[in-house]
Image (cartoon, rainbow, N blue to C red):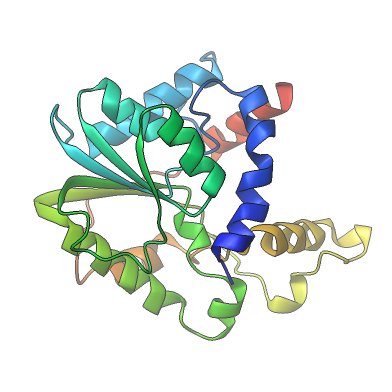
Length: 244
C-alpha cells in the first residue's frame, strides 16, 4: 500500500535525477503544448500552470492547496501570481526542497489530515497524484471508489463556497488489466506486463478506470465542469525528458 516509506523509495531517490534534467521546481507531470510542439518543455510547463490557475478561477491574493505538490512547480506559479500556496507531499526530500525555496509545504497525507488545521482555500489542485491514492491491494479489496469519495469529501470541506478543484490524473482507459497481467517477471514477449509490474511495484499506484468513474465518485460534492484528454501532450513531455 502507498505509505510515506514507499513514497520515499519512489520520489526521494529520484530527486537528484529530476533536478539535473529540469529547471528549478521541476515538474514531472505532463506539460501543456495544446497543439504547439515547437514550445520548449519549460514553456509548456509554465503554460500548464497558467491553464490550471485559470481553470480554478485564480486571482491575486487567493489561497490554493496543492495535494501531491512534488517539488513545488504549481506552488511557485501561485506565488509568482501573488497568491498563497500550501502544499502536501509524503516525500521528506520534497518538503525540504520546497521549504528551502520559500514555499509552504507540509509532510502530510491527505487521508490523515485534519480539515480544521489548515483552514479553507479558494481553490485546490492535484496534478498527477490521484492515480497514487489507491494501491493495487486496495483495488483488489474493492475500496477504490470509497477512497475517491473520501478524497472529494476532504476537498469539499476545505474549499470556500464556489471554490474549484482542478484534478489531473491518468486513467486505465479502454482496458483495466487483470491482476495476472501485473508481473514484473513476465517474459519479454509480454513487455507491457513487465512495465506495468515494475511501475506498480515501485510506486504502488492503481489508476481510476475512466473519467466516468471519477465524475461519479465526485458527484455528491462537486459539479463536473470540463475535462480534457492530453495523451499527446504527455507523449511529447516524455520525448523531451528523454532528450535531456
